[in-house]
Length: 222
Ligand SMILES: [Zn+2]
Image (cartoon, rainbow, N blue to C red; front, side):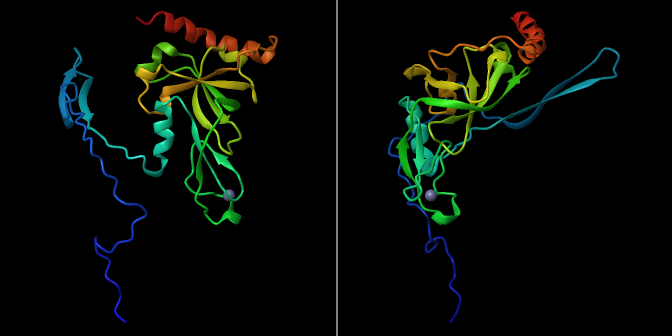
């Protein structure tokens, strides 16, 4: 028997090619794709230092595929997770197949998650990219939404950085509908409504002292 030749036509696909009837053109006036370009340089007065300017931009397309419902849900102000019909485990960020070995990569089903979470772990960012410098210091949490088996990262607002605690209850807060773009930045976490910080202690005081200079520095930003 001769081996089967795999061509583009007989190649097995997991899914049919989606049809997009509403083609959108996002390369608008504000988007200039220049690719990778050396755009110039400057040399210091003493001639000892040179800055070379490299510009890199490109319009990327990210197809979310089987995970699309999660991102569509964000536009509606909802968090969708996936659940294994065999063992009942749920996940946000979503998994399309169950990872429990006994479930043999069972396909998962969509489930709407509650807009509540718990802090799994966190860090305090004292430095960031240009776009979020003015929000420093930023509390970044890995939080468990509902009964999810995995945690998702996002910002925690409305709290002093030294007051964050493991396991504290959070709520999910979405941006106004017209500001959502279908990305994880459409929401952030906040402490649950009746939350109160625990009394000051040595560790909290230490963090407060570390964070203090960041607050002072941010005030100097225009
Ligand atoms: Zn399972």
